[in-house]
Image (cartoon, rainbow, N blue to C red; front, side, top):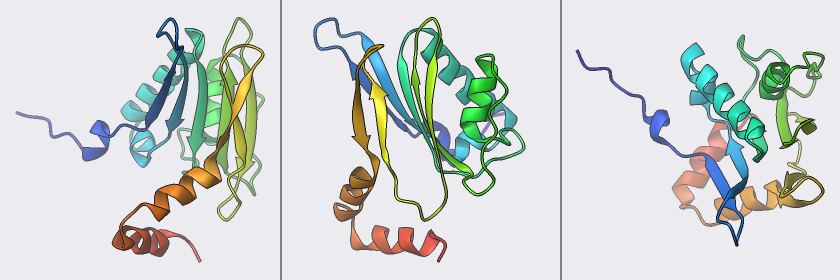
Length: 163
């Protein structure tokens, strides 16, 4: 018997940032896919990877533009933060999508921006060390990606968006 893999398992939704001198990973940007939330196994894999990244001293920006599921009723940040030891976060009902930037360290910190469909994507901090970050221009990046895409892709994406 051969297990068939779904296509989303092989997609890469991660940007990795390395220190110029040491070539050590210092930060990552992770775009949550529908596949990350599709099953208990995939959700656990995503959660474990996120926790390992933060606990190993790598700063992490998570972009979760998918609605919460039974596995993450308070969004992906609620699940990650709970696993890190604090289960007090509750996502606002009117802003169910989550952008979260984690500053790793002995006492991890999180900068969370709940958003809703239709909200403009804000600048989000991506930490490069304990005291410094760069702002990631999410809206401008999304717009630039659309401008560089084929017309058919733009039309297809626009048709999937709620009106």
